[in-house]
Image 1 (cartoon, rainbow, N blue to C red):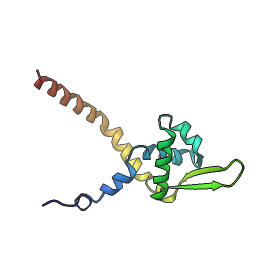
Image 2 (cartoon, rainbow, N blue to C red):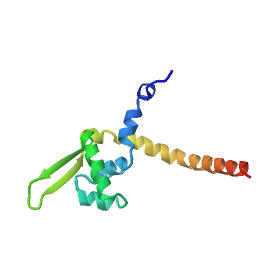
Image 3 (cartoon, rainbow, N blue to C red):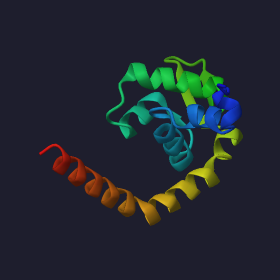
Image 4 (spheres, helix red, strand yellow):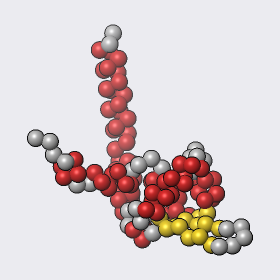
Length: 123
């Protein structure tokens, strides 16, 4: 019997939305620094390409986590801002940061132990 993953794990859709590549750094930058223009975000997220940043911002806008404001000036100005819905993820991110501070050393140790065990098995 195969269950729908979203029914088996009700947070799966949230994980897909929030933890896709670049979503958390974009939301963090908007939360931390407030309203920003595209080039400001691009400068803060130095390894993201303009194409990917555009795609992620559009998706975040579609999901209601980011708002886009177009100012019909010469030259045109566009600003991005985290929405109230996006900001509501703050406690989740804070909880995950606490978990990371408490447990990432354990995860790294577990990985080293596993990798050493695997290396010994292949000899």
